[in-house]
Length: 417
Length: 209
Picture 1 (cartoon, chains in turn orange, green):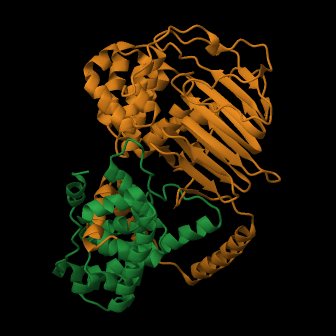
Picture 2 (picture 1 turned 180 degrees about the vertical axis):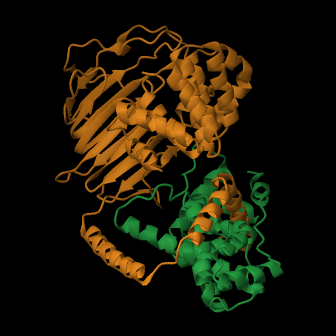
Picture 3 (picture 1 turned 135 degrees about the vertical axis):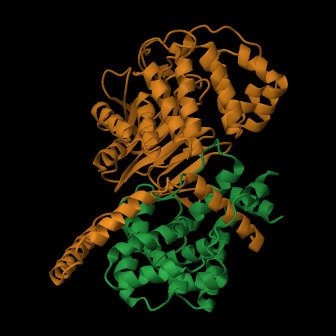
């Protein structure tokens, strides 16, 4: 399949990517360390004996560690997955298969990461989008899914989860088993049973308006035998059967009727996950006029379309339009976060990414994605070599979210000399 | 996609050609005479090239400075066993670098076996905003991580660092035949993974055409 020429081309591309992503040369520090090592006295026989003893102890420790139960592993498609890496699905669902038989499938246009792998479970963060989870029930299973400020504790079950940070909207449809949901809008952790759907948040329904307090949760109970409605991003599926709680349903409010979009409208194409076509349609419609005329929420969506069409420069234009036209709004803060994410994804613009995440946090310190923004800020600062700033952010993160998904990273940063 | 091939060609492989210098002979002699500080002079001459080889074999890695330090410490402590002259100094340092990289890969494999994490061990999986080439390159790097250490090193030296076959064999301290066999195995394994990845397979086809 790949001849010598292809391998050479691949090698050159990898070398270029390595050069782009390589840490700053640290020759001066390495040289200084070398001189320090060179000036130190050569190891004595006694020192050698101590090293041998240390090796023996270390070997014993390794043996004990080797015999202990091992954490789960997972694969992203056919590729081994690594905890801590961001995963993005674009036009097709992205399956994550775990070694215990559990699976989490990211819907198109979703972003997530496996934060931690445990002996009988894992911790995942859904940063945006939707995912379907099938968790194999095992004794002592410990699975946790975080979506914005919400946390879902799982033992063995099948459910669909959606999180829209732009609207602060969380939705969970449970097909089998039970889960416990924690988060704002819930006075106490809520145990959900098969057939129920829970909808929370939706503070940014009108992005240009000031943020409203979180509405009461909507729990919809369906018969356990019938499939629960999928928590599609837009809008939530029709309510089945009987509402188990007499809470008002936020989405039941009257909405101005809008004309049905044409089949080749960018929105329609985006809903079909045809992002390149959607972007082309938006450009044909008049990119500038869309940036100048669309409401903030649609502009954010347009920016998503551009990102998924792999046209970050267009996404930046749409996000900048949000920042300019809706300054001070939740949407403008969200645009700052998205700018940070684009810079983060570039893999080299860490300072730029840190600046945008910091801006989001300045504008919305208690925002629905403050935890994610702080985690990303911390990581960007670390990668940018801003050790002091990363440490300060790590301290704040640990104080505010001691069980947060980026706690490990905060600990590592603070442990660095 | 029309830009893929040209983008791929923008980075020429690092040339490892080296002109021996009389200085090297002097520094080696000083080291042999117990003047360990002379290692700094050798580092000044060869540090960048050795770092590049480590980068090509391991990828961007937060441990690179530590590994680079290790290479020169090993050179300093092992100079008594070095029987070559100034002309063979760089290849000798390359051999130490390859051994250091191999040890690092195996240590990490052990850590994975033990269920321990190594921060920054793997490259970032390409984000949705990345251009197609970046996605393909990211997938290729992940595919390479699945290779056993010796095969991954051979692949990295030959096709990423752009070394000649005999240079690969010398750096890996194996015969030409063994180097060829490792490269063939590395290539075959990589191709098997790439064939299952439509993005990578399509990108490789474009580069080849």
